[in-house]
Length: 517
Image (cartoon, rainbow, N blue to C red; front, side, top):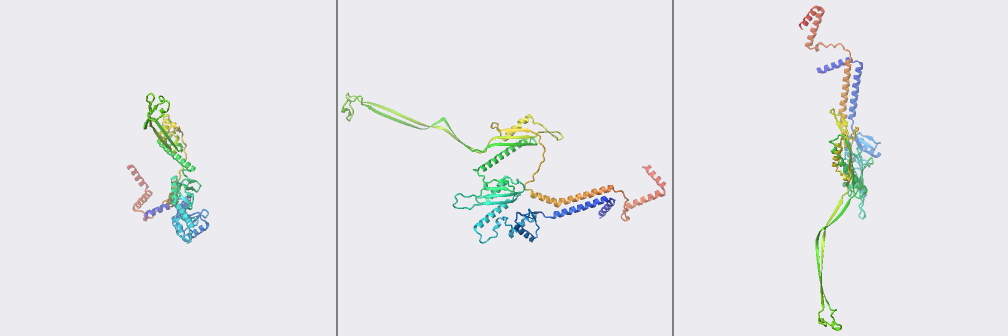
């Protein structure tokens, strides 16, 4: 309590010493700080509004507003009355309540909840249409689970199954995404979305799912089959870019320990022709007898023309007798044929060259060599002869370059200009950033404003005290003075009385004190 009393007296004393300008400054600063804190408190007390429903027709918006007024919930309009926003802590509960109450807008897809209310007399055609709408709505809500996707629209084209169709029609799908910022989805996430949609629709292939964003950017092309020129071209381009990025990372691994600043570009020429080569090689020296055939023929003949007598006797049957008694001449001939079949050594080679063979690699690297003195100042220097020889060789070894193939590596030294670096916001960080801003808004800003107000008041008080003239001390009542202070005052009064009545005695006493010192 005594401390508070002394503080109050000190403030009163400071206030009395201030001039008019100082007092006006303190009053204005206090009022400004009070108004700022009050306004900030009112602003912080207001709830954060988030989108409840969007793209509403006028009749749907009227129905939703009437429902919100009945529930006593505050709301806001935006986008020309087509979007309704409510406090952020009630968005999801209100969506469920509106869906269950049946006041959801007709243009909004509600997923499988469409079958919660059965309608008698519905035809099979309408049931199929509702099933397709429900599947599309469920897929849209599944895709909206991605943190970078604000809204998703899924359109399905599912043909009817016919028994006598000569060529079966294939289903397809089109997805329109509203992203938090361009390029928020990477290729793997886009492929995941296509696979999720394809797995949810019978007979749907991921290659027949088209994905675009609200800016019209094609995120995934349809019908990327192997026999399609467009599909083949896109796959070849992706393979080429992936290989170039791989080589670029290898070059960066080599240059990072050597230079602080550098830039690398890699260009790879690739052949996507698929070739099949069949080679047959014969080795004559390596023949082996496979089979051998031997044929022997013996022919025996008699020559009677030289000794036969004319007349019928020579033509009579029986053993031939010449007139002179000589026997006929006999001739015997033997023939032998040998056929040997040899197996010649043969080598069959079948080589299939897969597409994607590298035909040429070109690497361009720009580095910034510097010299650093003892004070940390850096100055540009040219590359040495050793560096001009060893660094390109290391780069060629890192990327697997082949000089006989015509691969090239170019190295150049240059001074890099310092440019401002723009840091892009992280993907999916919108919610976290809003939470941080909300904490700053509710807790940090009031404390900061109060601290600024106190600093202003303190500076004003110091300036007023320095400029104000000195005044007589305020007399303090006797009952508040301690015994020691009273004793000192009594001694002071006696000294003053002595100096007035007997100044010579006081002078002698002072001389004695001085001589003693």
